[in-house]
Image (tube, rainbow, N blue to C red; front, side, top):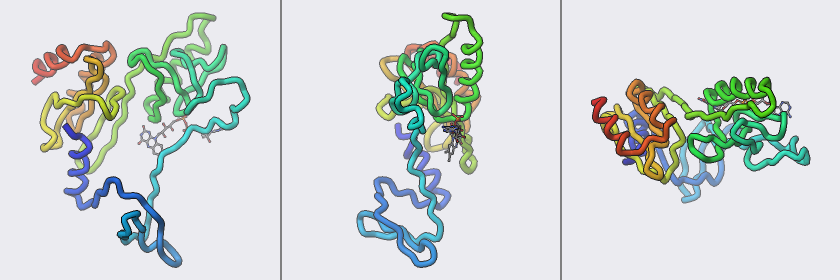
Length: 217
Ligand SMILES: Cc1cc2nc3c(=O)[nH]c(=O)nc-3n(C[C@H](O)[C@H](O)[C@H](O)COP(=O)(O)OP(=O)(O)OC[C@H]3O[C@@H](n4cnc5c(N)ncnc54)[C@H](O)[C@@H]3O)c2cc1C
């Protein structure tokens, strides 16, 4: 199951020339850019270039502070980096108990929910701080497609269609790791996807997820 391929097909159907593994070797032009030079020697005509090369957490100012820095500020499950010091948002690498691993999440919804928990933890009595156990959520509207993602899917998870079909661009897929559901993604079936949030929260075994899917159809 290739969700990325379905997404690329949608963009191609709207006239976008999607090229993967195409390394940019340079830009050419005079007053302004006229073409992009690719590593294979080919060129792409362009009068505007948008560069999307990712972001890195800005933690240089914390070097030497004694806090552990490793692709973000390393925190425990309560988002505490040290006693009385909390991090949140893009910069926070915390232990999410739902997925039993450290993660750093770069989405608005994450920082909104995390800030509430961190505020409660800052005000809590010593030893009463609660873990920030969350199912990350992100959405994007592209053409007619409402795309939503839940959980913490990774490239090497097993992916299975739970509702609809990739070809119709109306589907829910589930992501399985170590026999449990760890994420879900939808094109245009947001209500169905939201039903999987509690299953992800409860680390539901895959067989039960499939039963749930059958019962919903
Ligand atoms: C181009 C782009 C598009 C995005 N699109 C989406 C989207 O569609 N959906 C989505 O969910 N998320 C999106 N995101 C991610 C989203 O913007 C972030 O997850 C969110 O802004 C994180 O909030 P934050 O408060 O952790 O960090 P930020 O919003 O980055 O705020 C951190 C602030 O701290 C300031 N700062 C840094 N160092 C210091 C210092 N030493 N002293 C004082 N201030 C300092 C910075 O200037 C900044 O204002 C996008 C991000 C980018 C870059």
